[in-house]
Length: 451
Image 1 (cartoon, helix red, strand yellow):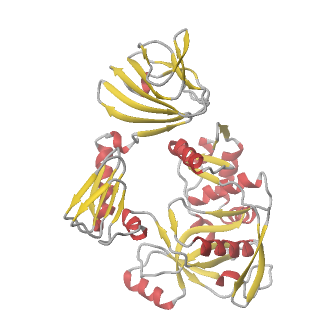
Image 2 (cartoon, one colour):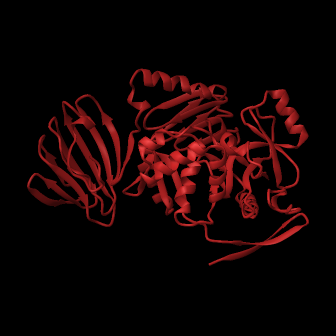
Image 3 (cartoon, one colour):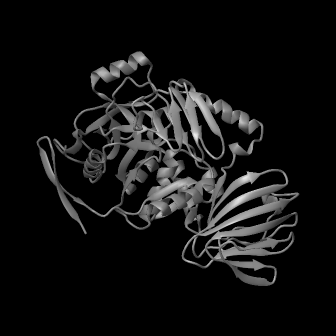
């Protein structure tokens, strides 16, 4: 079903047909694939593709891959490129800007959305507004939607004095990193300015393989791809660049400070999330993920509790968390490389307790899913069914367990858990032994193609 909506933009008045938006293409790395799929499932979002990058190569190759994938199905597709970590308060204003973007994209423009600055921010790059929109091979569209303009230039992050001058001029916008263009047009411009990127991406897509719900780019081909942003690779060089101002309460959620800025504050200007109790606390961001957090006498602090760790920092020092991450990595701490909740193709595994000799895990197996048929030489397992119905394979036996029943799996015995019900299977798993690592997993059969 199509919905016709009429919009007014100054002297311009036109009707836009809101066509049904296609399912999104998500691009992420291999380690996040099941987390991404699970979040989409929880939100009820169907996807066109989840593309897995074997290595990071910045935004230009990612956009090239997305364009190649969508052009397999729709030669006239328009791509709306959105980072995953942005906050937009006024959705209707954003939607109007996107509809304006589609207007210019239909004339083969390459659109970026420039955030109307509210402060002399030194942490963002800027875009300078040029003259009226006039595209190569096109007549000027006149006074089109969205108060758009040609892009005069991109500028790097300025010092404070320069940022103040930008703000006062009214001719500069923050670079949002959000783009919109026809897929064939952006590929054409990439071919023109960065042909090596397009060549490597074509090869990575053509040699790529479908794996469950994911599409894996060919590792060797993608590793050969130059790493570059779409700003440097195309937008700073093209003569078809158009900027559409966006004043929709945007924030780049790249820090805990940003989350404090956009969060709902109490009478003491605190942003509190989860099970939190405070006394004499002001201007702070406190988040509890798994247990009670009590804070006393804090001002301008960030406190974040997760099942993995607890972060406590002054708001002015949160960027220094990078130093903590470096220390975790140098000390080979597991917190730096894995989460307590590990998403799997069949559901999730949360580590509740771990030590050198035993692990206690919480397994959630989705309806119709099953773990691999496997065995361990150096550890035994004990499964307790909390909720749901489990089909258990233990050696040559196959039997059913329900709530409050359990089974012991000795070391060396092949085993599998399967959920044939229509509700999640909730299991507590206790592992004991001398080697409780992935190295002691011998898969004999796997429904998801894992080795």
